[in-house]
Length: 322
Ligand SMILES: Cc1cc2nc3c(=O)[nH]c(=O)nc-3n(C[C@H](O)[C@H](O)[C@H](O)COP(=O)(O)OP(=O)(O)OC[C@H]3O[C@@H](n4cnc5c(N)ncnc54)[C@H](O)[C@@H]3O)c2cc1C
Image (cartoon, rainbow, N blue to C red; front, top):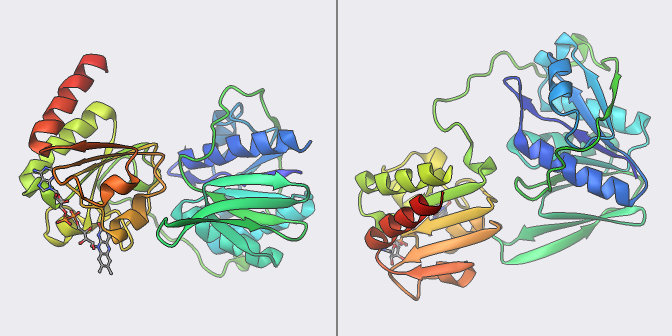
């Protein structure tokens, strides 16, 4: 089966979750006698192609036409569908970022199939694709089977294996399938808000704080631990509602869904609405003084203790080994 991986580019940089999708596509395609095909549609495509040449693609299709500087997900999804049709693609696999999920939906709509977003595992089973994903706020995992000649799915950040150091891909320039007259929506400008260098949804390590921190000033403890680990700081809704942290830091049902390799929950009780946003983290460390806090039910490792003693000790120990 041939697998198409549209590469997401923002401000001239490849989004890391796209490389994870590409790594996964390589391992799936190799098991099924097919190719992992990366698709780069953006001005400056050639530099992007160079940067991902050995990241897992057997083949890279690229086009740097100026029209792609104005295309929103709506037009890009139609392009992905067109190329999937032309190239006999069995699976279009995107990264489950905000843009990736939107583009998956448009691509699936244009192909007349359903999109399966937010996968934590993707397997091939004969001609169909099996997609596992958490549902009901992480309380269950559902497995979907796609029916039909082509499937569209997105894989959560930090769930695809990178394939850096793969043999160099074949590179093929393609023509754009769109002109300005085909656009129904154009992107006029894009300004990143000042804030974190890495978005919470893509972070590999998150140190999250809750009401147990007691005050906004005490988040300095977490900032320091996060700096030591190369992590990003997140928060529960209680502290966001209290104005201690911005809403962009909020993890949970009404905040962000995250899937880091390591999630450290500090002074967070583990309400179901918080778990909804972080239960698919690969490893969860909970620090809480209440041994009955619900967060311990999903934690990989739990530390029962006062965070004001535990966090500095943890940082001290990390300083000795990192
Ligand atoms: C519709 C709806 C949507 C919601 N969406 C979200 C959401 O997106 N995200 C979210 O997080 N919440 C959400 N909530 C709120 C959620 O129900 C909880 O109220 C919230 O998650 C609690 O935040 P918390 O764990 O920081 O605070 P608390 O529940 O007050 O927990 C604080 C914890 O800190 C511990 N603690 C206190 N002092 C220390 C110390 N010194 N050392 C160690 N531990 C200590 C306590 O034992 C306690 O477990 C939502 C609620 C509703 C109704």
